[in-house]
Image 1 (cartoon, rainbow, N blue to C red):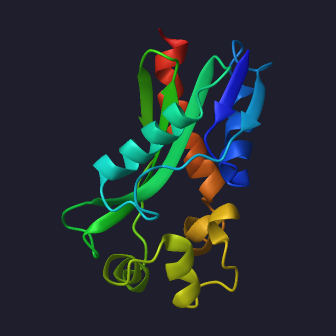
Image 2: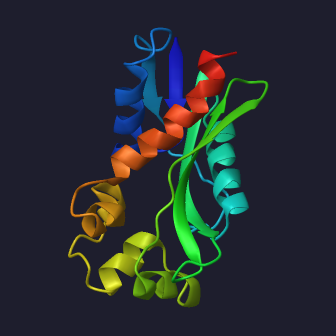
Image 3: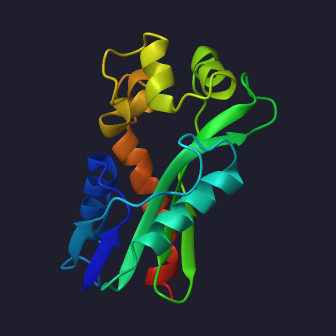
Amino acid sequence: MKIVVGSKNSVKVDALKEIILKYPDLEHAEVSALEVDSKVSAQPKSLEETIRGAMNRAIGSFADCDYSFGIEAGLMVVPNTKTGHMNVCACAIYDGKGFHLGLSSAWEAPKKVVECMLKDGLDMNQAVFKTGLTTNPHIGSAEGLVGIITKGRLNRKEYTKEAIRAALIHIENA
């Protein structure tokens, strides 16, 4: 079996490789990564745009494989939150015929980060770096902002795994 993930971000690739080990039908799959344009903004600002980005990555990476995975994180509007937005990760699995979707838990970034993303058009990496919450300009390929604000209790890989697990429900229970 062959699986392609539509990103070379090591967090996304490693999350997928670790998760499939727990699925007997997928545990021996060969996983490869292909950098694919999400065809959405660098920082999706709605749930629809985030899901569309994941789907675009899955379609764009579907070649000579059984399944392709698109993984995209972005903001979504959530009423009654401090910033009006929460971050969520979407996983779209494409089998050549249709999609299987899953989402992670959602979490709220600090107000100054969300403002940089919405007002200045920065992606989360740039916003976190600009606001001084990290000296790592590529925090999204490491623990992510969620790792910083939860003091390591939840990191980007773990919440990415949540979205993958949720999408795999449809594969495992076809």
